[in-house]
Image (cartoon, rainbow, N blue to C red; front, side, top):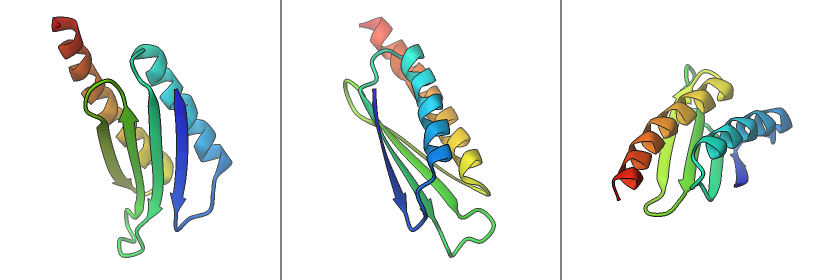
Length: 99
């Protein structure tokens, strides 16, 4: 699975990219039908409490899956986003099983 990162209004973080890629590889091992992922990290200056945003869009057969979360740190936002995507992927896998 290919993973593309985009950092909007923040500096590129190699450690954050590596952590995210590791988590997404675990998803790819669990759900073989994943093709690619687009990961966006953004900083919302208007929201000082939870202004760290992580958006992830997954390409797979059928419609794409998308999840976003807003947290105090980028790591927390990434974990929330991946948890949301895991739930969506489990539902999608059930649909694949019935066909």
